[in-house]
Image 1 (cartoon, rainbow, N blue to C red):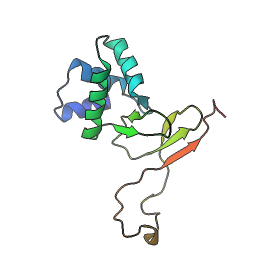
Image 2: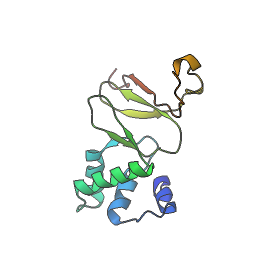
Image 3: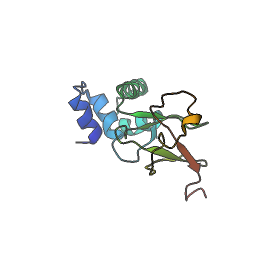
Length: 136
């Protein structure tokens, strides 16, 4: 059973065949699929699944905090099932490939107090951009 499926079962999330296939498609360490890509892969396993069901399921997973919605400038949103391990993203400016990265250090702690402007900083999202080997 995938990590995502296990977490969802642990929460008591009603596991319909459509929800299950969406969760299975999202399984993996560096999976960052668009909703259309999720629908395409889900339809290979469950031909009757609708695009609306995929979008609704992804929306529910984001609200539950089980999947992260990753926005990249000028491209479709991508969905990241790695919501439990703190990480940042490395995005190819050419093809849009997204990879999880785990930089060392403490991004919140590294922000000087005078640069916080009184904010109580609770989280950080850093996106590294560059060209992947295929686009370089």
